[in-house]
Image (cartoon, rainbow, N blue to C red; front, top):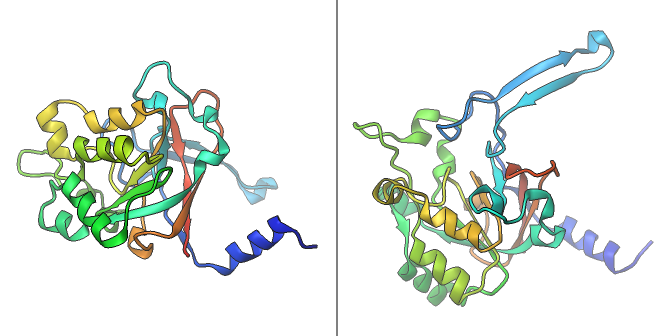
Amino acid sequence: MSNELIQAMTLLKEKEWVDLTHTFGPESPHFSAFDAAEFTTLFTHDDGFLAQSFKFAGQYGTHLDAPIHFVRNTRYLDELDLKELLLPLVVIDKSKEAEANNDYSLTVDDLLHFEAEHGRIEAGTFVALRTDWSKRWPDVEAFNNKDAEGHNRIPGWSLDALKFLFEQRKIKAIGHETYDTDSSLDFQKNGALLSEYYVLEQDTYQVELLTNLDKVPATGAIILNIVPKPEKASGFPVRSFAILP
């Protein structure tokens, strides 16, 4: 058996694959407004089979946000096209900056410096922000990184950088290692998640709480975001992975 599809699959399987998804459970870090996940065993092998019940918010663990998550009258998760979930992957490494300044927000200048080194960010790509915040998983205290006043100190994207990517570079989607698109400092300053709203307003999706971006090159890889299809969902845990060039 040999055709173009089989040959393409064979080629892909010869490449290195990197799982970009956290394993999650009831003790995992999660957005503060959500209850912790509940995993319950319904039947055991003594009953003849193992079956479990899972209760968690749609935005839990490594997850995909559909446009409807923030923006009225936009698409639900089940309305995303399958081909949107397979995209070229660009990884912007700001791990050193985020370590030095936990409130770091990616800037337009960061993107221009990236392009000077790696070439122009192409249209239709998935751009991921690497901060190495995922290395704090599954330590809830380290991941939330609260200051003396109880505020999270977590990095993110600036609104200007996202506007540059979507409007000037025509990218398709984004992802990051943190709970939110916005840095915690920007959220506290603006009183809203302006960057997250902007992304979803572009009628596209984003993936949050990614991991292992340090194992992916700046350009040349592809990302697949495999997600269940619950009816009228605003988001759901996703299995995201990269295939390296």
